[in-house]
Amino acid sequence: MPRCYFDHNATTPLHPEVAAAMMPVLGAVGGAPGFGNPSSLHWAGREARRLVEDAREALATLIAADPAEILFTSGGTEADNLGILGAAASGRLKGRHLVAATFEHPAVLEPIRKLAAEGWDVTWIDPGADGVVRTETVEKALRADTGLVTVMAANNETGAIQPIAEMGALLRGRGIRFHCDGVQALGKFAEICPRAWQVDTMALSAHKINGPKGIGVLYVRKGTPLQGLALGGPQERETRGGTENVAGIVGFGKAAEVWARIGAEERIRLGALRDALAFALQARIPGLIVNSAEAPRVANTLNVTLPGCKADLMAMGLDMREIAVSAGSACASGSVKYSHVLLAMGRDKEAASSSLRFSLGFGNTEAEIIPCAEMVAQTAASLRGL
Ligand code: PLP
Image 1 (spheres, rainbow, N blue to C red):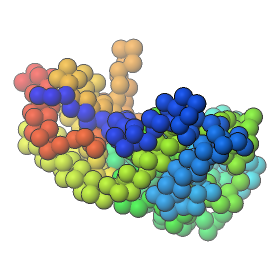
Image 2: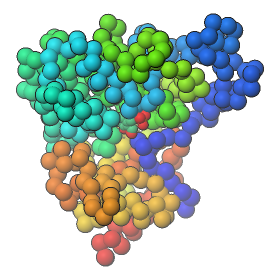
Image 3: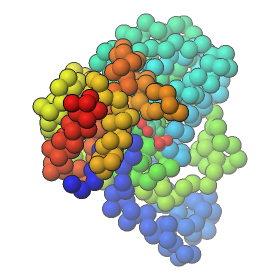
Image 4: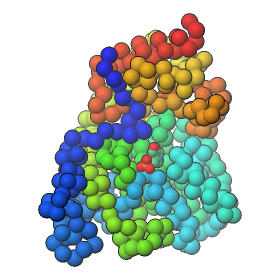
């Protein structure tokens, strides 16, 4: 069986159109457009600037924003850091109380923990057993001095979609800053529109939608005060200093164009593949549980608990068969790490160390589904000593 890649929530390969758009910029030896510094006033700078602004426009179109609201960063992690730490540093939040969801990506958890260590008061909120944070849970956590709330649009482990628009409506009315990690939502939602959702800042990343690694966006709603963290240049509206990653930006812009074009069809295709995989696994593996099955989920993500099978051993066993999946837990220096997402959903440690994530993408085909399910079933049976 050929090697299979089911880890598109970790990263995706470059789309051929993205690679083709980036090559001239990467390979330009003093000639092709794009090698210049976008801040330079001469022709080479102007050409690079034009490419950057075209990409900004493509990103803005994909998320129904104004190009002036798109700020390029080095990836989703920096965008989350800037959205949270930059808000805190702006001195313009209503108060020093923060509300954050426990199942966030470390790109959000760590900046919040940093602020907590600096004396900000943090209320952590959990999703329900289905992996969805309720708007009422956010509402209950609010205080008169709440300055910022952060909840992700779709969870990276379970794919569960969160009621961001509902939360946005609640928070805007109270003048509370709303940051949203949209990294796993981009390309996977029919519509991702931070402005309509009344989100103030939203993090996005190119490499989850067949764009290059090392390039991201922070959507910053017009008029949102934000203190830059990388000082030393006037780039990106004086909020993110440093010469722009022109090739990366061009790649992100092209990936946005590609997903605007293929997204609707691709989501239907991936949803069908995902459901077929779930069905095939359930038919072969006794006791298998699909996590967040009852929640609205992004089409490409399937998270399953395999009771009695440690996730890291499953992932290693599958890797030996050249099937790439992700273990929600990882073994670090002999000790089992549990999926903080499943623990937040109220699952026990056994479940939180026995769950696998399959995340599908552009290259996956129907032909892979049954052979993959067979391999997973064989690996599970051997781990269970059957
Ligand atoms: N947020 C979420 C939900 C993610 O899944 C990831 C990456 O896995 C990130 C943030 C970080 O993005 P990047 O890898 O571009 O820094």
